[in-house]
Length: 239
View (cartoon, rainbow, N blue to C red):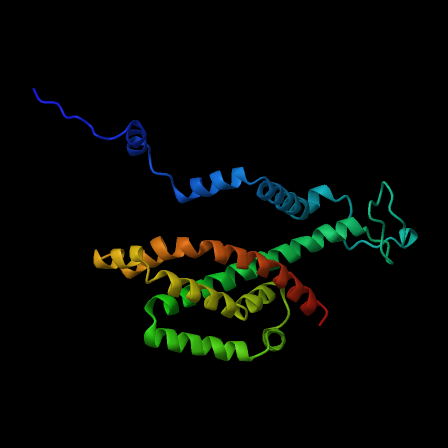
C-alpha cells in the first residue's frame, strides 16, 4: 500500500482547494472595502429611486398649473416652492431627472458599445484595420459634435429616442481611441503572447484577457460621459 506525500504548505493546500473567484466577486469585495465608493453608490441609488419613483413620491402633477400658488416660497406643501405658473418645483425636478438619467445612461451605453468594438478591433489587429478605422474616427472628430447633433436632430426630428441615439452615435470616437490605446499597450505583453502561442482564438483573447484589463479606464470614461450627455441633452432641449 503506497501513500503520497504532499510537499505543499498548508497555505498552498488551502489555495488549491479554494474555488476560483469570479470577476464579479472580486469587484464586489473591492467595493466593500472602499467606504467612499459605497457612499457614492448609495447616493446614486437614492437618486434613481427618487427620480424613477416620482409618480409615487411626488404628490403633484408636474404640468398642473395653480395660479393662486405661483412663486410660493418653500413650505411643507411645496418643499422647493412653486414656479411662475404655480407648479411644484420638487415634482418637476424629479420628473425632469427621469429624462436626464435615461438620456445619459442610454446614450453612454450606445457610445461605449460602439467605441469598444471599434477600438478593440483597431488596437488588436493593427495594420490596415487600424489605419482604416482610425482615419474614419479622424473624419468624425473633424466635425464639431454639437453641430452634428443639430443636423441629425433637424433631419430626424426632436424626440427622446432620437436624442439618445444621436448623442450615442456621434460621441463614440474618443472611447474608440481610448480602448485602442489600451489594447496597443496590452497586446504585446507576455500573457497575450502566451495565449496566442497556445492557439487561443482572437475573440477569446479580446473579450477574456484584453477587455477585463481595460475595463477600469472604460468605466471611468463612461461615467464622465454620462454628465456630458446630460448637458448635451439640456442644450438641445432649448433648440
